[in-house]
Figure (cartoon, helix red, strand yellow):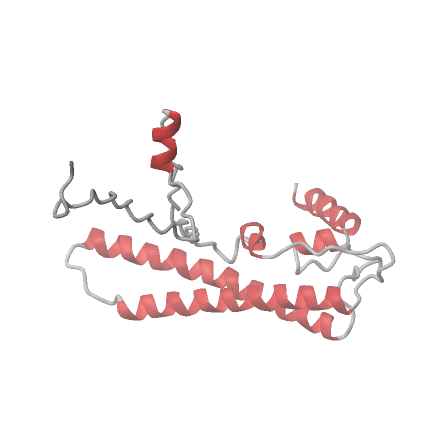
Length: 202
């Protein structure tokens, strides 16, 4: 028999329930890999390779076929009038840029000749240097003549005569002028002139 002093058995307290946060976190890739047992592939990281700067190629202004690569060819429309303002503007920019490049080359040559006036003790070195200067001067003489032709073309452009054959008066054509902007004759008249020269001097 239980005595009065004997204590009643106490009920075991239930552990307090953990508070579940309302915001559930998304399972990470590592947890997903543990559950499925499949390895998670890492996303490939693409490294951006820096773009290499285009190498600058020195183009001789006397070689217009190479110099022409700096300009986009003119795109003419079907209903477009020959030698309109847009076409004149196109050839004005081409002729002006060509003339400026030729003048710049001439100035470089003059500065080079002025700076390099050192006396060479060896006669062979002196002769080689003089020959080099002579070749440069001949080249610049050709460029001076070319600048004269460009000036005539610019004058014709101003007077609205540019683009027409000086012999027969027909259109020289956009493509021919882009290949040779100082052309003053159409392809037929130029061919006749070349045949006459061959007959005279050939």
